[in-house]
Image (cartoon, rainbow, N blue to C red):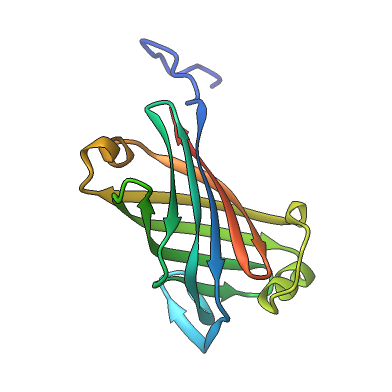
Length: 170
């Protein structure tokens, strides 16, 4: 039975359009310890977000901004190879508009690479799978498009910051 499912049109894969570059500054982890969540069992920790920079390169208009202090990345280290991340923070554009960010991510790699990241050591980003799905909320009319699109991203964890590159799914 190798019959193809009939379709009126072929649906192409959506293109990825560059959108945001983020450099998110983080503080020392707050260790909570063993925990259970909807992801399973793991080691819970919270990473304070202390600031950062943002650059938007979207076709609707470019802008710059900053990551406000006060957010956090809620992490669950699952086994010795993966971490489930849930970051929540606020971006403020140079025009004063604010954007609430909720970013779900998965970071995985060898047990050695993940252990080194957990200790705050530098690890070559090519050794770690770090992908994210951010969502945005804002009351700024000029940025409403951010709530009408889907986004994916890739990241790298550095000792005192997280670098993210976010793409709009076209």
